[in-house]
Image 1 (cartoon, rainbow, N blue to C red):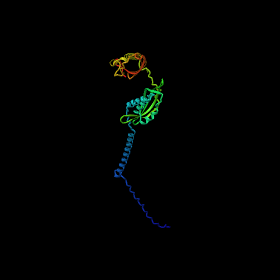
Image 2: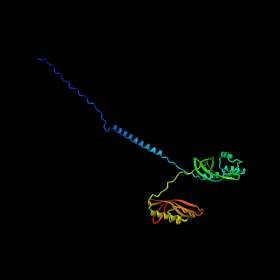
Image 3: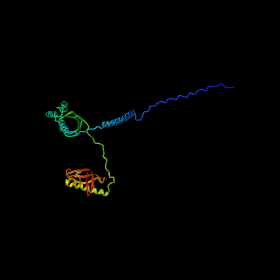
Image 4: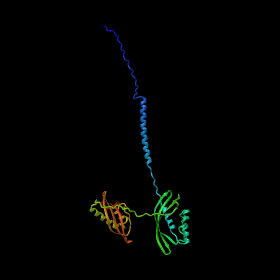
Length: 303
């Protein structure tokens, strides 16, 4: 039996897909160069701004403070004269009027009026200034100065007299022509007291041999014996470059007290007390010295 004949189907070849064209940007294209230039420029600008900001900050932090020296000689002299006239009076009307007139040379008009009640016409005491200590002169504001002082007064009432101390503060104004006037009345203040500070005491540290210490001691005893009356030419045998002054005093040397020796940079550092008898006052004079000695041929005091 014959099978029915089948026609062969023609095979259609698959269509080839079209290649998609990809545009590539070459390294040497203008657009790439422009992008690189922008990137580098941005980076450079950022670095520049960073360093500029640091420099500006540094300059801002460097502040120069200029100090100026104020000559307070006139202020102190003016204050001393004021104190003498202000704290001196007599219980007589004529003397009190004279005091009031003197104060016009120091006080503003307002303070002159204020101080009319300080010393009354019927005051039973007289006062004289015995001593004045000016502790400080400081510029409070421009051309205005604060002065702290202590005045010692001798107060006399009838036949009795006594001494009194008090500390005050006043304020003065100095104008462009250096003239002065008291603009704040004397106000009670505190005076400096004894400090609790104790300086560190030097001690022998064993750096100087006993033989050297004996040499230095002998040299110093010879020097301090002749020192009080030594002339500048005689002092040159012991002292270099005027390290110690000529004193020309009638002192008699007694002894060296508590000498301390230390060797530093081939030199001998000495802390010592020279005990003298003052032939004028007959009192004992104890002088502290901190000396530096050096030996070439002979020992010399160099500082």
